[in-house]
Image 1 (cartoon, helix red, strand yellow):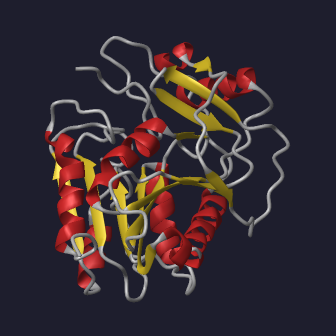
Image 2 (cartoon, one colour; image 1 turned 45 degrees about the vertical axis):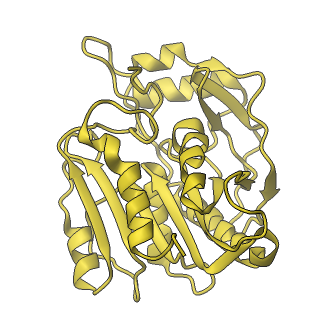
Length: 300
């Protein structure tokens, strides 16, 4: 069974491989996937003159970098009647805010999610500028994942602004896209999960998600928004980025009176969104689907 090569915030290395060895195999993509998309309004401007680019670790695991124009990708649901009102889930991929893992945490998840009776959207939020062209991007990857250089800028404010714009966009087009505006949720992975949490904590009156999901994201903190929405959270005990965090966020969420579904898998690492690896983390999607149904989000 093929092991996932591309992950959301950092790539796992195989035994004996040098840290960040995966970077050497990244190649440019000349024909990135084409998806129907709508541009999102930019509420927090930032200058990034470099053009958007695409790359791949494997042909079926692609990533996008230098995203300077936020967009909402409309996933074509082939299982729902076109005119049936349904809940919406906005997918927020990860990539350390340096790129977006568009297959592992976007397209591949959407293929499974559409069968659950929801309208699916994929958010292309703005990423950190890494320079012009593929060579500059690969150099930035090597710096972060091979040389251990720290990312100087916190990109979350821009990612949050774009996520809020996506929520507003979906609700404003609820009638056109056959969406229940009271059932609009967000599901994020790694850096996308960090973005989901920060968006929920911001608690903007016109951009509050009705339900939230975090896959291998933060579990620590006490900042719970007023009237917090139901939370679904999963992580593996051997996650290399969040394993040292305590579970105070989940406790605080529960203590606030809000609903929490939490799964701590004994193994699974980081980046298991769409590639099974033979651990209990493989069950995350089925558990998410059951959670949607149990919370009356789907199945109506």
